[in-house]
Image 1 (cartoon, one colour):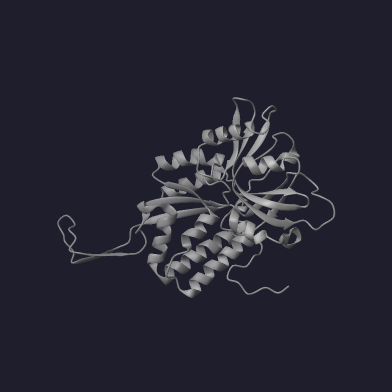
Image 2 (cartoon, helix red, strand yellow; image 1 turned 30 degrees about the vertical axis):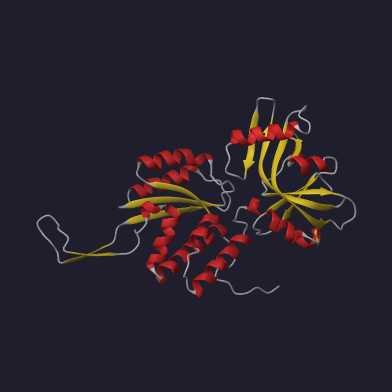
Length: 330
């Protein structure tokens, strides 16, 4: 099948090509207007580094015993980027980058660019690197491809630049570099607990066994009788090991672990809290829909994932799935 000629093609040596594409778009922004790059870096790195791009023009600036009539200066800075297509980094490699950065003049930044599935990247390699970077007055930042993309989408860009950024986003999507959980519907078989799921906004399964291991997903599809007829946003998934013990698998909302665990225990008490360990899905924003399975038989397992693309919220998802079949989303 033919494909349009693209600025960001997919081919071999993917990690280096991904870095090249990101640098190329930054270079294009800079060549169009240095202020564009300055604005992007300010978004990526924080306001403390705003205005570092571009020369400064000053007049009659005192320099001890001499006062030049005019001066043109450029503040030195260095930004190192280490790119991973997954999310795991090698601590030794990052520390070597810090050592090289120490020799550079001016402000110094090390970016760990990756598909950080978590909102707060917590790679084990990061904790020690952060401490050493801080001691050496180097800014170390884990940045996701998603946040990079958001930061380069400036207002008032030319059509050529806007098209190039759209092309980069298409590349990120095709290469699975954006956080997949935000675009995933976790369809679960609720035939035996359907009414409780809807009434109490909770789905419960055992926390033991591979078949009950769920990938992080933003939405849950409530399935019975060969169709998903409700969808909900998953606030969080909490494993309750005992009356006193819990662990948070993941959360998609800005609430404390303790608050979510307490909500999980309370809602579960309305259903059946007599067995452990239990995996509790806290649901919100439920909406009816009609997303039908047309293949023979029921679900082959307790869960199935659907890539639903970019939707605004659960209501938007329910409307888009209305009257559709599973095969249309394969």
